Amino acid sequence: MQPSIQSVSGQPVAPPLIGGEIPLIDVSAYLAGVPGAAEKAAAELRYAFENVGFYYLAGHGVPQKLIDDTYAAAARFHAQPMEAKLAVKVDEHNIGYMPIAEKAPPNAAAQGKKPSQNEAYFLRRERDADDPDVISGRRFHARNKWPAELPGFRETALGYIATLEKLCQRLVKLYALALDLPETYFDACFARPHMILRMSRYPQIDGADESVESLVPHTDSGFMTLLPPNKVQGLSILLPDGRWMDAPGIENAFVVNGGDILHRWSNERFLSTPHRVRNVSGQVRYAIPFFCDPDHDTMIECLPSCQSAEKPAKYPPIKFGDYALWFAAQRYGHMSKVQAPSEAEIAPGERATSRWQA
Image (cartoon, rainbow, N blue to C red; front, side, top):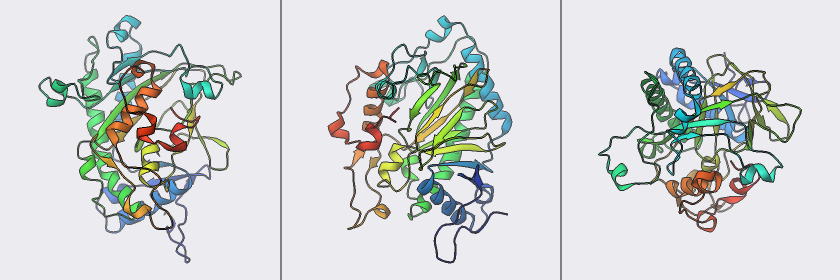
């Protein structure tokens, strides 16, 4: 049984903590419609984001077979010959295959790091050829690039994306309550969210070489990232006291974190926590993080519950799509020549322009 989330003083009490640090939040009762469960889960979520920026999500309802099948699909994709992967090479919409970088991006170079040792394949919302956004060439609204010789791959990936989208649409109601907003506050901007499924492959690295990381320390750019249980560990997070903590794998629990958009939207009330990947397991590691953000027309403006006369808004309003384009243009080499808003227009703040940026 989980402890009460409120103490006598009214201050939040931690939910169960994994490793003494990362909250474990079970949403099964909330998803089942149990009275009071939403409020309890939201209070635990508030604790997680005000203190750590990460949590473990249990009781999520995502079938383990679907997770296993999606991991297997990622391995199948990366097992293809390089020419097959390059046939769907990543484009200006950040869709497709991205090889291991030859040159360290600015955030890695600022930390004295070599390029992150991972290759990745990006998918977004599936779109038809007659989709108005596809026809108009709207940025990040292009069609997915599918491998030609992997039967069943597309169906598995789309099934996973659809399942995670529905879960996120339920979770954002808890985020609203956690931020002292009406439960439906985020519903409209997550009706057709901006989504990315990243299928990553991390080869083994030399743990003795501090200049090499599987994924350099960084914060995520968006609202919500979900990582399903992984049999091969490697993720670690930077705790508020400056210690790196290896995030242990918890059976049937996703690792979830917030990003810079959630940090900005909440006027820095909710944390965007640096994290990294170091695969020193002795075997190849695959990861299938799912990124869920508001739709591109959403205005990211300081939430009414996160500002006051004493705590005025720290950031000007921006459209999420403009922020996403700015981020991609300065982060990815293949996006560097795309016309994007300037840093002055975005006013991303210190967190998003720090050495943790990725």
